[in-house]
Length: 328
Image (cartoon, rainbow, N blue to C red; front, side, top):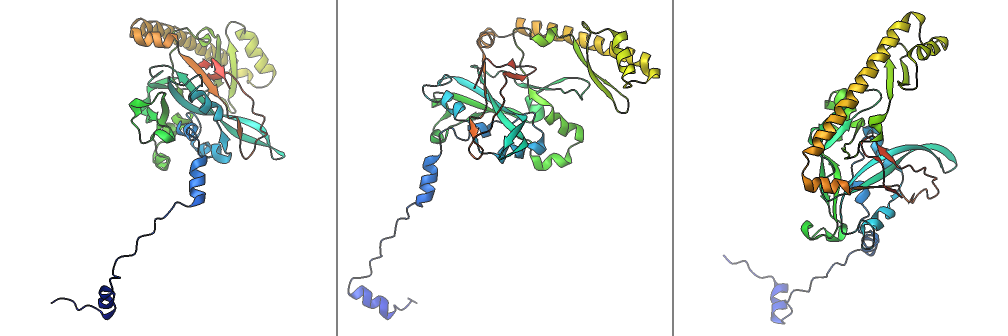
């Protein structure tokens, strides 16, 4: 049965006023539109690069300051030295004692390394530290890392292929919430992880005659030993005289150091042979790309909430990349 019309509805139909009132168009809030307009095209770029080698518990400390990387942004925008190129970015942190708001404070300063190369510099990572007895070179995927495309804000509805500058950032898919289920050794690997790169030119480190010694005592003896500059007897005597090494450990310590030197020499020889073999078998196009590869190291211009930080800058990147070709 048809529903009876109400008196008001019938009356409205009679005088022709039943047309629906036009809907009001909601305009964006002025403050929201203003906030969006203030965002720079590459503003979140540095945050997109995983800070490899930074301890998990310290990653949040990077965000204590509102860091400004407009120097990196300008280098990648039209007119910049990296514009129109293919660039691979990874981040890291350099802990520094800085003067912040009237007091000395340990600050985890983020740095971004831009690798100017038409192909990925590597698909591997190195795991090394003074605390570890050996070095590991692993595929990125073993540490849940990969190079992923970055798309600037204004181009996020565009096709990646059409972008003038191709940007890839280091990504890590390891969930922090899952770390508690991992073994301590596995978690520590992330702390000691660094991007791997095999230079066509033998790095200075291949000619280094220094080995790090960690002799198992309580407390352990931690010191460098240079087999070209140091004498085994004199080196050991100095430690005994300083009462850092017990007299009855003298001979054991010398043999320990000699074995570490032998191990290091073997490592250097194997690395040299592996580099030569890899270069001999390298694709000609990739070899050409590596011959012209450039590393750019970027420090933040400042922090918007602490603009007067006196950040110390260095060219050194890591043991594989060694020094940057340009730093800013």
